Image (tube, rainbow, N blue to C red; front, side, top):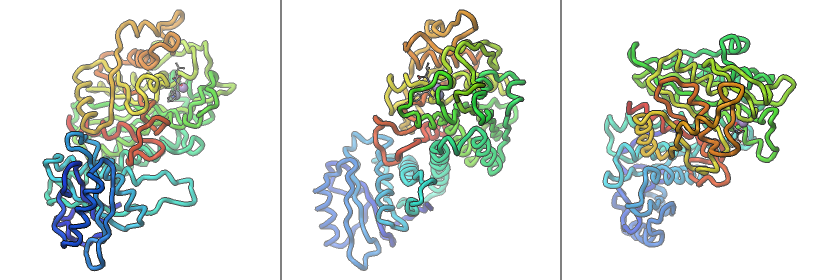
Length: 490
Ligand code: BES
Ligand code: MN
Ligand code: ZN
């Protein structure tokens, strides 16, 4: 899908889309057409009333350079969110593809509706992400994506914003496309190879640590969880060093369990296939690193992805085992299905010790309890730093990737104390499962500002997921847009 801008809405196009606010009798930014066309436009506005998500097609007669007009309802102006133009644009793009068009045009709404650069980025993110389809393993592929023309007065600022939005949307799409891969086609080695490929394309440093080196260097969590699978564990490290030499980096960590059976504490069969999405945190970090390097952001960012497959086997780690983590602390294993915190703890400690970062941000499909607490449209965050939390909340508001904070005080830390080791890898019964998992992670960090995202509910579409054009079935790429916004505003 190519994206261009055009000053005039009267240029040749197979489809011209204009937005209509509820209660208004105007199409935002639409130029004057002949009387007949104007009459049918007005009638259509009356019929649809600008209701949110409604789209109506008006075919135009033969000689007109514009072949069809689509009116797209935005709902009431006071109810507009940062997301409205994004998911309505996504719907238009899907319509254009359904009509098998080669290109389509969207009139960017005037500035009283939305700040122009925001509108542009929402149109681009919405259309690109809505047109992504996971069809790698189907004989029948999705039709080719139509090109997009945005009607807006051109400027250098707009051109730059378009390029940036394309890179950001492509980052999220990259995350979706690898997160959707089935577990037989995506092992820790496969993820390491993706990391190598994006690092070579965009001149990042890439380091992969494998067995037996992992064990030798003290990554006891990654080694233990990985030892039950013939698909060997990998620790993937990407470095984007575009800031000054002595500037501390931001470290991003992502859980990448390519398949989580639960191990010896085997999960029940129902919906176990969804545990291919247990690598989503790592895929989010890969998508962010790809975009960071393409945007050439003038900062230092490190991506660390511990990747394993959690399998039951004669060589698997067991309940009762006591392992030593990279931090030097010991952990009593009481449930091999609480594996994410073990591999993350190693990666978090490694990130803090080796990079002395400004901040550490981690992403993980860590707990089923998170879905119970917040559902499937909001991620849980847990943090040890007010300033970092504030910045993340601001980025969350701008990108509409929603987060909600859970508390983490000493009482929760006490819930993971073990009789026989420094910690145990589960809390007390099912109480506060998301927080006790975060408590385990907090023990891996000594002093660095840190924020943890539990994306178990939001990383892929589930039963209760709110339908959005730009999040078709499967992985959502949650977090990519949010963190890129944060990094761009540092
Ligand atoms: N990957 C799962 C968490 C998960 C489950 C995410 C379902 C999304 C949907 C994680 O490794 C896990 O199994 N956690 C356990 C922890 C428990 C054993 C303390 C859980 O949530 O049940
Ligand atoms: Mn598990
Ligand atoms: Zn897991």
